[in-house]
Image (tube, rainbow, N blue to C red):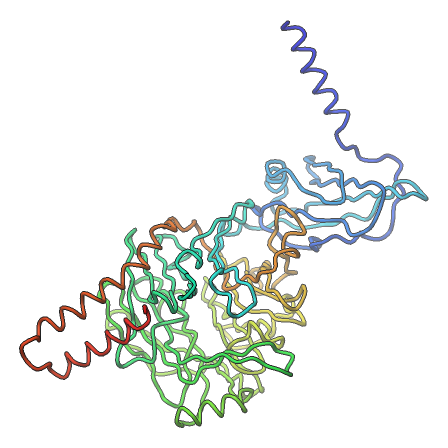
Length: 529
């Protein structure tokens, strides 16, 4: 019986070996490269990236693909879709680090048998942060209930949901959760995200503890948005905005989001205090971002004349293309919590452009930002391109190595400064996809490539957009259930606070400040009804 089992196993092994793909002999060499999608050719790739699975675009009777290093390791696969074994792929990357990885593709043609194309080549460079997070949203503008915040292990295909908007939405009350942000690439697990509309507020996670806060004060326009964590202290910079949304009927752009007012605030997480950074009524200050050393706060701002709300709405409706943002920064003293004077870095308006989304490189050498024709909602502006400022020389150039004819925006640096992650609509003009590109020590970016997927057709069949991609050195460990409980918690706390305010003053007249507080709390509670 044992002999029968042994020979059966041996036969299975032999049959498996006989069925393994083999590199064709005597194939006719073509002096061209075959087209593949995604375009994983002539790249610089991370040494720990997930398999770059692809599809061969040319039709043939049979397909053989050989992936190899010049040191000897290889994979041979059959089929028009090339889906690699993750373990073998990682072994190839390890062997090819600092070197080149090759791809030979063979096609069997009915008329002339097997043909071999010139090899595809990719250089293997430094590692990339293993995790990223992003929003997945349908471009329906009103279907935010089904939006999710996801995280992905880019060294594999593992993806999971950090938070699902639909969990606390119902037929009468919608919900929007956005603006996820981390301190120092989530090294210590400190993060935040906003909850809009139903059960609104900001969830802040520090030291494994979670709280929900409302940064709206009588002195601010609204709660905080567009967060940026200070790298060394429990401080978060925000803009506070009066934001409106409109739709174009004739313009090639589909949607516009505009600020009718915008200021900058600083939130102290430990003290639960809000400090105003900038609130010039003739400026729309927004998109704050800390320098790597925490000594500067970058932001953008557009100059406008002071006017009433109705006049402002008319102006933004008719002259929205005249609103152009310039790039600024303020110095910051951590010991005193004081900001210095405004330093103008780049007047985009002098060139008929608008700047937004400044991001300093981890080494403090470069500032990456977007330039569009107007406004700040560049994720929907085809004119949006990535630009690079050398902070040592103040020189600015378009990042032509990365840019496309369509939207390029929402960018993030890896923690080692060698990789740029960004959203782009270059594939179909409607959906943003995530691309990454190598950024070398000489300040040059290399050919970008789409985030790899297990099935190379995955993104083409996913009718959702990726927004606000962020690198992380480790995954978010806060559970979905914990976030749900934190989001629901504030309503009861507000009700108790209002009740306490009335009880304390039940037999005497309310002081002016107490009355102001109660009225403010009541306005907050209206968001829950």
